[in-house]
Each structure stands twice: as structure tokens, then as C-alpha cells.
Image (tube, rainbow, N blue to C red; front, side):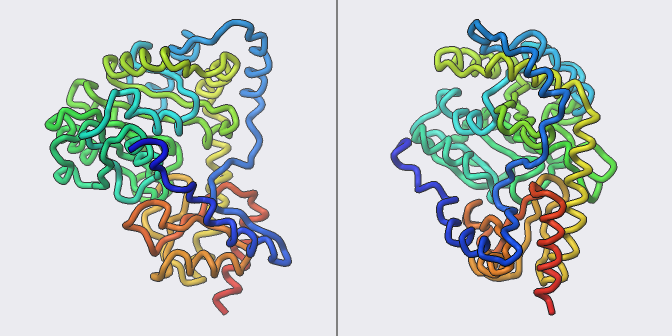
Length: 370
């Protein structure tokens, strides 16, 4: 197996629904792919501009400034106080890291890569590319022998599932029994909405309450795309076990995977400023507050979604039927079929549309209930 074995890009199947939704008299409200629409904060843009004299090759390992900023951010925002610069590494966005991690770890045929049952499809793509076997399983007790890499996603895309300290600790214990690397995709950790995450920080797999006193075999993956509107910068990073980070660094040097120097400088500015993150979260909160009651009035049930960038909803029928209903209202969503075999009756709606358009979608949903 390999790249040639990948299926067609799934979002191509959404094109007819987009075309139908775009015919609505009041226009399309695109709540499908979670691509940010809000401006990149000025503090970050200014940092990028002052670093445009980038005549030399950038450092794969990251500049001392960006590595220090990552270390400080984990201590300040994630409750991980004892990282060093040997534990962190910037990446060219998080999707390339997710897709390439099996490659960077030297996995291949006969190896197993575990990922969530309802999951961002790139976890399985990365396994397929190297000929490894992707296995969908949420319960650590179901993670099989032969597993070399385990992906967890907290908060989850698309369902918003968020792992507690106790659940993370159980996952760590099982990964170590298997001798597997445990990679926790935590890209939406600043976006808690309900349950304990209204008032408590969402825990990282590197939290001292989780690790049992050692980060061995553990990775945290993070992106600045959503909390800082840096999707176009491709700005992300990993942190965790120094041995695993070192192995990934060595492979990335050979492959030429280095974030541009101006982007590294902008990342450091973004990680050092919490104010813009709070402001962005408030924008997402307003959109969420407009959508949730309208969806419920229209007959949708919201499952999970206690954290993250999406609402994970169902009418209790096939997702394509819900996609068709929403398209008739001029609303484009993402079908649950894209996220595995266990979500055929759900659709995903993102919070990345201007509030004015989200309010139009909410009004259409409420009207459809009458």
C-alpha cells in the first residue's frame, strides 16, 4: 500500500451540495471546512513583517526564540511546567505532521496505527501511506498488540470529545504496555465550552498528572491555525519525549521539512500573546450561541461538542439526507461519513463563518421548523 492506494479526496463529493446551497436567495452560509475567516491579529502580522529579511535557510529545529516561546506557552497555558527546548519542535502546519508521523517514526507493513473511531481522516492516511494498518478504537483496552503509534484527539475533530486527566493517564499506561508512541492531537485545547471545560483548562497528555513522572513515548501536537487565525501561515509544533522529538527532528532534516524563518518569528509572537486568543474565542462563542438553539429548534440533536471548533449534530437519519436538507436552506456542512464508519448519521458544522452569516443560518433553521 502507499500513496496510490488513497481514496479520492472526500470533499469533492460535497460539490453538488455546495452548488445547491449557493442557489439560496440570501446566499450560501459555508459551515463545512473549518477555515478561519477572521483577520490575523496585528501583533502577529507585525512580527512577520519585521522578519522578512530571510536570506538564509531556516532551522529545522526552530530558532531559540520560537522554541523558548513554545516551552513558555506549555507552562503558562497547558499546565506543563518542565519542558526544555529539547522537548519541542516547530512544524509546517499540523496536517503534514499528522500525515507524515508514521513515516518519520519508521513505521511500515505489519505495524498498527490506532486512531479514534470518529476521526480526522488524516490519521488513517498517514498509516496507509507507509503500508501500516489503521485501526479505529477509542478504548485503550481494545488497542491491539503490534500497535506502534496511537493517535488520540482531545478536543476531538469532529465530535468535540475531550479526555479527562484520568482517561489520559489510562491511555498512557496502555500505550506503554504496548511499547507504542502516544500522540495527542490537542489543536483545539483553548476552545472549551461546556461541562467542566467551561471553567477548567483542558488537560494535555504532557500534564504531570497524566505522565506518571516521565514523558517517555508521549507527544502533544498543536496548531495555531484556529486560535490565532494562522491557517495560511502553516504554524504548528510538537512537544514531548526528547528521544522521540529527536528522532523526528533527524528525519525532518533529511526531508527538508523546515518552517519558514518569518513564520517562526510570527509563531513566537502569537504564543507570547494571550489577549488575541481570548478575543478569538469570544467570536467563536458568539457563533456557537447563535447556532446551538437554532439547530435544536430545527430538530437536530447536538452530541459531544463540549469543546473544539465544531458542532456535531444528527437528525437520526443518514448524513447525506441531512446535508441535502441543509443545502436547501443555503447551509453547507460536512457529512459524518468523512470521519469513519461510526458516524453515518451525523454532520459537522464549523464555527468559522462571520457572525452575520451564522445568524442568517440560524434564522433559516428556525424557520424550517414551522
